[in-house]
Image 1 (cartoon, rainbow, N blue to C red):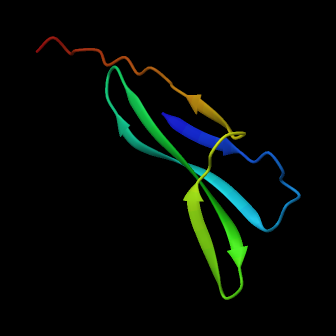
Image 2 (cartoon, one colour):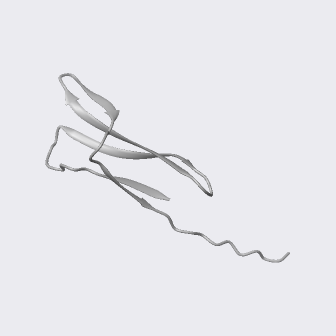
Length: 68
């Protein structure tokens, strides 16, 4: 499983968005999306809020039993 946040304003060099997979089970996925913004001397990180698009990609892997 992969996850990617789509920055709504990529030209804005003062802010970055990213997504983090916190939990993946066979029936549920928990994703948190964060944003950072520049602040004099340091950056600030906060939950992203509305307006962010997140792409989730799942590739099902089938494991075959060797029968042994």
